[in-house]
Each structure stands twice: as structure tokens, then as C-alpha cells.
Length: 211
Image 1 (spheres, rainbow, N blue to C red):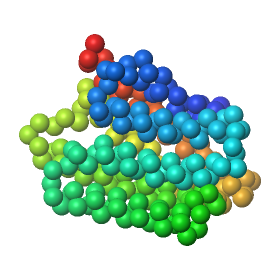
Image 2 (cartoon, rainbow, N blue to C red):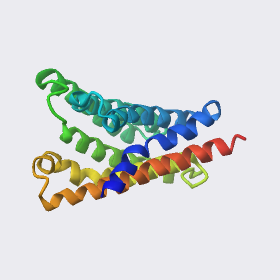
Image 3 (cartoon, rainbow, N blue to C red):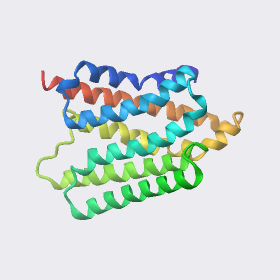
């Protein structure tokens, strides 16, 4: 488990490294993913170097809010169906409003709000399914492996539903390290690695088309 944990911790820097090499040749979609990865790298770096460990909960909580903003910008502009757009807007505004209220009333760094991460992941699954339905309604279906967006939503769609369970039990697992539920962390490590590998492939395909 330790090897997987270390790989899961550092894998976030792989898509960043690829993006730096091709920064000025990336599409808007890829730049948004790079933005997400760059923000995700901050708490990972702090955790790896054991810097500002007391502020990790605050950083992770703020990252959850930043992440959903980036994914909303990435996916919402690809949705044309009014009903689907309404679902996007309602879920996004509801999540952001709830997060801000919780941060103001309870404090953004009091603890890690695992319930917000669970909500994040459920919302992402909903958005991706709506995007797939939207694409099927179009004459030209663009979600194939030659399109970087395919890799981005595939990585996210692998990660989001498969890690809801571990985040649901996050505080129990932290306070009961001897519990068999600790093995759920393996699921998180595996799918976290897969997500960033998929992001890396998407950035690679996106840049390769422009060479």
C-alpha cells in the first residue's frame, strides 16, 4: 500500500510536466485541466514535504471548491440542451452556495469536509452522463480517443464514483486505522493514479495533434 500511496501522491506532477513542455500549444480544454492539476498539486506538495500540515484541511476544502468551478467551465459550455444546462446551473450554484455557507458558519479549516467531496463526485458523474447524452444527440459524436476531452472525462468518470465510498468513511478510517476499511484507501490510490494518467494522455494527444 505504501508504494501505491507514494505513486498516488506524486502522480499529479506527471500531467503538469507534460503540459509545461507543450504549454503554448494546448487547447482551452487542456488548459483548464492543467489549472485543475496545478491547484491539486499544492496540497499534495505540502503533504509530501510535510509543510503547513496544520493547514491541509483548509487547502483541501478550498481546492474542492476551486476544482468544481474549473470542471463547470470545462463542461458547461459544451451543453446546449436547456434542461441539461439547468441541471448544471442548479447543481453548481447549490454546491458553491452550500460550501461558502459552511465555510463561513463552521470555518473553512476546522476539518476536512469529506461530505463536500462526496457531493463533488456525485455532481461530476451527473454532469458527465448529461454530456454523453448531449453528444449522442449531436450528429458529430466527438467523444473518441483521438479527442483530449475523452481522456479527461474518462479519467474523472473512473475516479468520481469509485471513490465516493472511501470519502464517505474518511473520518472513521482516520480515527480507526486498525479497521478493515483502511483497505479502501487502495481504491482511492488506484483510481487517483488512473485519473492523472488519463489526464496526461489527454494532454499528450492534444499537443501531438498540433505538432
